[in-house]
Amino acid sequence: MQIWTIANQKGGVGKTTTVVALAGLLTARKQRVLLVDLDPHGSLTSYFGYNPDRIDRGTLDLFGETLPERDSLQALLRPAGDSGIQLLGASPALATIERRSVGEGMGRRVARALAALADQFDYALIDTPPVLGALMINALAASDRLLIPTQTEFLAMKGLERMVRTLAMVERSLQQDLRWLIVPTLFDRRTQACVASLRALRIDYAERIWPAAIPIDTRFRDASRAGMLPHQYDARSRGVQAYAALLKQLLASDDQRLRA
Image (cartoon, rainbow, N blue to C red):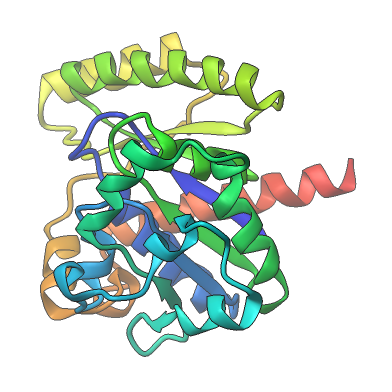
């Protein structure tokens, strides 16, 4: 199972949209997908019609005194729409983890849980809160690949600088190198500020940035309102086509890495 984490220390940059769009496109390729919501706001959980305030079992259960056994982990999963995707949902109580996650091995709870489920899925995609803490550390420690959605505007670029510094710190702490890629999002080519920001990103992070960009697309909002995956709602929309191009590059990169 490949584990992809979608993270940024700034909110509103398209993390959940990226998770949902890529998950849908992976299922269209006949891949078995698990979604893991580690954000106490529960945007990913809400997307699929679940109320985070009423989630009684989910990612919070990974952070008890002991990690649930395999059968108990399976019982935490919920169907995410009608595509076969499974969801490990979030509740606001996840926010309490930051005050009590001090036990040995707490930073690898998600990694251990996903290892126990690895034979059931081809991909796990993790949505994270926009803050450095135990939840993001867990997501990064579990990851085979990190995607950093970054809005093409000045304030988001400043947030990216913080995220890059965080990654360097986490790599030292985990004693492992993280594979990460910046994904420019919410791009509006009609706006000079967006164009200038994208140009700056390409200069500053030339080796770490996806060369294209995810455009602003109201069809994402429409798909969410309809309770559908973006590719199911409108496979020909420019946003879905952009994510399809991103996924094609990610899979090609993985294939090339396996052959190396």
